Image 1 (cartoon, rainbow, N blue to C red):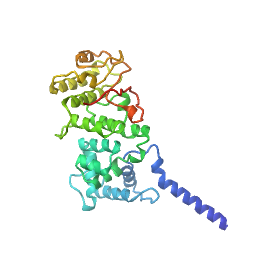
Image 2: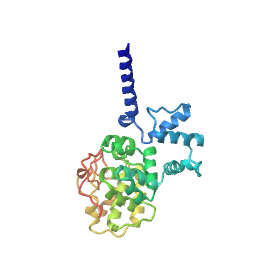
Image 3: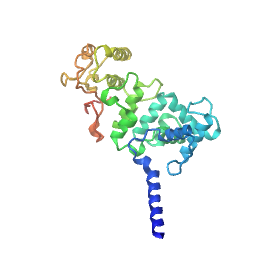
Image 4: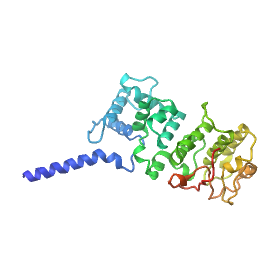
Length: 301
């Protein structure tokens, strides 16, 4: 009888240990798993389980119970919720601050680096990561990052206007430097940078090309063509360095799409099943692309 009790206790301890670590290995864990866990407890009226839930999950549950839901108010309900409320505001607004914060987290930057570049307190960066974009323990699992944090954009084309998705894609697969160029080129906020106009224009064109669907038809290109026209109106006169700096090729061959070939692009030529969307040096990062062929010869500047 004594031996049976010992075995049962050991088995229970093993189960508790597995449950407490399951969130680290769960392949279907959502990006905001603590927020989702607290929301489930709130809706069902359940209590916290010490095997599953940590102090931050308890704080998020307390925050949601105080709000009476998950809608984000303009004013923080209590001083103890100051950081989680600011993180919730960033997440709910879904603007450039959220896009850049998540892209830099996926790029592997530290809280201090992100704090300096985005202009947020280090503590807020940490709380946002743990509450809404928990990715650092999975940065080596590229399939998981694509499915959970980036989405289908690299495979089928990003939705028009999904600049944040392109930022996260570039940040994860190429690192902070390429991300800095893209943010400087496509952000609506005025930013200080030292990049040439050629580099910025190449980045803008890359973002536009990333938003063209793989199975694009002529009628569905109207929105993208309008965005290209707006970009060309803002751009400086093309110089010879622009052509090779953005090596975008189509299924018709390996000729780069230079400014003189853009009229053909507008007519829908060369947008077949196979194409290259440039400026993504995958080989240098050791990670493989999904769905698209990407050249390593393209450069920004």
